[in-house]
Amino acid sequence: DIQLTQSPSSLSASVGDRVSITCRASQDISHYLAWFQQKPGKAPKLLICGASTLQSGVPSRFSGSGSGTDFTLTINNLQPDDIATYYCQQVDSYPWSFGLGTKVEIK
Amino acid sequence: EVQLLESGGNLVRPGESLRLSCVASGFPFSNFAMHWVRQSPGQGLEWVSAYSAHDGSYYSDSVRGRFRVSWDISKNTFYLQINNLRADDTAVYYCAKSTKKEVPRPCLESWGQGTLVTVSS
Image (cartoon, rainbow over all chains, first blue to last red; front, side, top):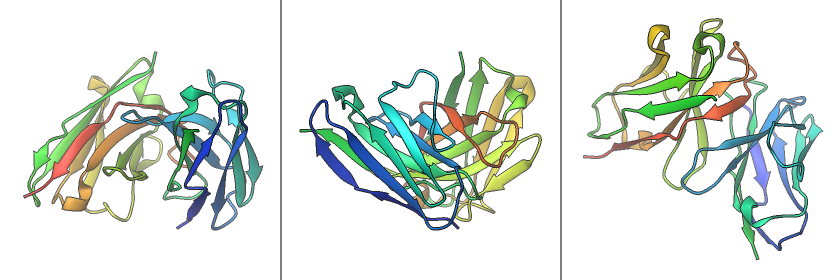
């Protein structure tokens, strides 16, 4: 099974900052990676599929990059509404595993 | 508008069974693969199971043999039958809709609000 390692596990940044979350796969998954945002008590929300394709309605300050084993979710101009836990999911090989999450807080 | 509404979660004892339901609306239900993902309290997300008419059913190792997915197209409802429940099955269970009719390489674009299953003696 493919393991995903997300880092950091948590971060604190100021409004307006750029933050980056990395997700490393234990083997090559090409571009088959998704990113989700989950706010407390809510269901996950899909942000990005295919490593870099932003879903409709997702603010353009979110972006995804990477291929193979190393991926990054970047949030430009961090906003208070971005407080959440972010998860990556590899969708290349069954079973489709998730990373452990990165909790983003505002300083 | 796509809507997914889960139900059926409850407090049950170890060894008991439960059937979760996910009623779908706003899209042609049989044209897309559907998935179940769970989240234990305070923990991360765990993919559990998936089904499509195109590919059949898939299960994670941790639930294979105890969980069974099915759907009733006439009711636009996706089910997860959970047997021989264990304490580590305690979680919020979400159903999610893929963008594709095939199960592999999913893109889970829509999620329900989840239903809580608690297993305790």
